[in-house]
Length: 284
Image 1 (spheres, rainbow, N blue to C red):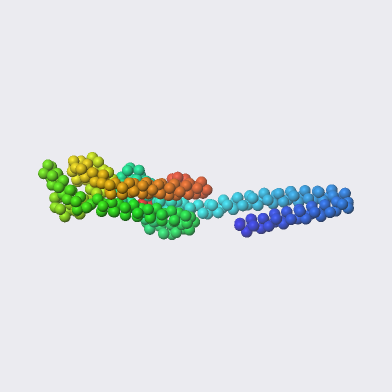
Image 2 (cartoon, rainbow, N blue to C red; image 1 turned 90 degrees about the horizontal axis):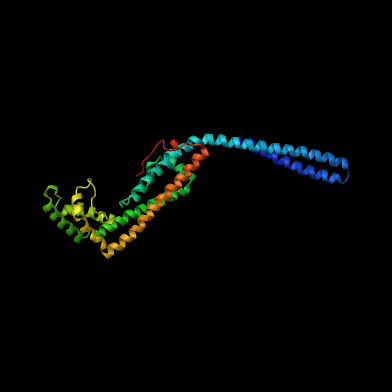
């Protein structure tokens, strides 16, 4: 089919050249014979009509060829959407919802190894810019997690652990029915790091029933949160907040770019939204 369109275009070009040559010929002859002029004009008009018909035929054939190609490509494009685009969008939506909830926490990279390798490789070959965008998103995710580790280490000093121990002992005496571990080693391994993360999150009041130390935090959380007022901690928290916002912006930017490409595919190949989500692969 493609060869046929190419051959037709060659025919159009040759016809156009003949029209031009014929026109030049009859212009020259015009200086010699009026009858020749009339005949020449008639001949040029016929050839022009033929040229126009050839152009129209080629245009129709090109459109038909494009439709055939798209119909053949459509199943593969649907598979790319279902196995790559939609899983990536879905995972980024989860990350964005978590970010917008205000819950600062460790973030997970986009685990592209969870995707079908063949489809992902094909997608990146078509759109290498997305490979770079995913790489940058995963890089900032690593930086966020590293900064959280640094902040926890900065907060979780021996003095802080001692303070946690004192408060837990006081809490156990006041609430023996909801005792927490008083062993100093256990506090170092368990509670002090969790409390440091809540300080980064600026958690106040009720943590929810999922936390066994929820009652303790309701009583003593504000006391521990005073660590945020220390100048060295306060400056690092401010720096982290900027990084946290950048992470959210990157997630939103990548999600929108992937959604846009999915919409382009949907419009170009007449793919329904229902077909977008025939399969979901969670990457976090």
